[in-house]
Length: 469
Ligand code: SF4
Image 1 (cartoon, rainbow, N blue to C red):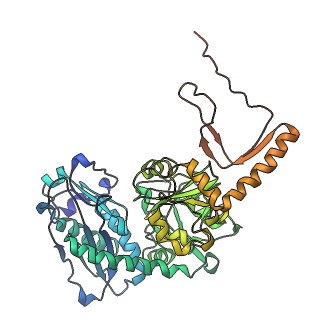
Image 2 (cartoon, helix red, strand yellow):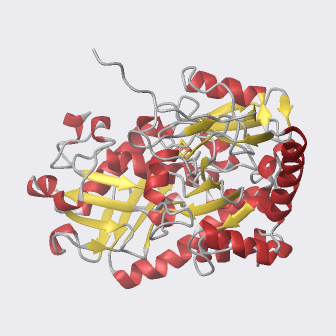
Image 3 (cartoon, rainbow, N blue to C red):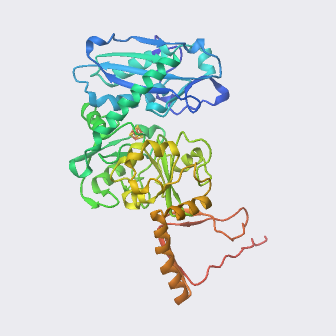
């Protein structure tokens, strides 16, 4: 593939460059990312006469005009036309900007929609990659090669800060309209689900199961988008998933989803709960908009999104939890989610849904406020209310959050049983937790509980001396 792009781009192009990471010290510059507020990428289907096929333009300063080491706003607008190119395909085509941009040597693209982050390396800049036009040329060619239904395409990079800001507001409205479309549909109403394995290049065992009530965790592909993509490109990363038998309506376990996950993960994932973060949670790649994380101290769930700066209420920053959550694993107590999933009537249904959510960043809470049941709105803490789990516990007690009732329900029988029989029973989801009051031995210990019930008369921890040879 690399040689076929020599006429339009000064550096190599090919899947081999996917996954390439460019560190801050090696970058020529970056567009978007955490230091830049206004950024977006958008695909729009147009009438053929509105498009000049193959045109790539840059509105504002180009790579060569911008200072080395800087962070700049960017909007990417890809306009496509074709007799068979449906509006429903916009979301799926848009997601491919990530993949195609990453094919370019020395260009790193992360995230999606309003949250993009693109870096250009110094070494590729020195090889001549000094204009976004080269990147656009590659995109246009790859789109046409992968989607023969695209008859015309034009790509515009907007770097003029005022124009990016203006278009950003419009892009947000377009994303919202796409998301809203799937809100009226329920999982029970459709004959089949869809899947996506686009992120397997980064997370080889990751399989997204996309249902009306469970948008993809990147937030970019809903059920309608995936359906349209599977129809036009059945051999592509989106595919139909037979629902099969509904094995458990509470956790959302379908035999067809299990079978698809097993096949596409090459046997690594055999069961998937669509509405729970415990048991057999959905896998997470690395593109999730947010992480739902279990907080054992209050038996509640926190939400942190990738734009949150600083540690979440459990003391861990997003990046640390992302390492724990991602990579295509099923990690109980940590789940990558889309912000839109919080609007789903099945949002963490098996775990208590909104009744279990205890903390989230204030701006995320504001964004999904209408989806939060009214009686819970003032009971969910944000960084403005608390900064530790100890403070969170007090906050929840004072506000009468539903999890507090759960503490009482769990504590009462356990205490009664302990008094009557001199023993206690506990059930916890799989979590690695430090044991309070136990001195560290050789660097500390962890106990890992996996949905077990433990009955013990005594817990004895002994130091085992190594025998001398
Ligand atoms: S997160 Fe899922 S839906 Fe989104 S691109 Fe990756 S595999 Fe596809």
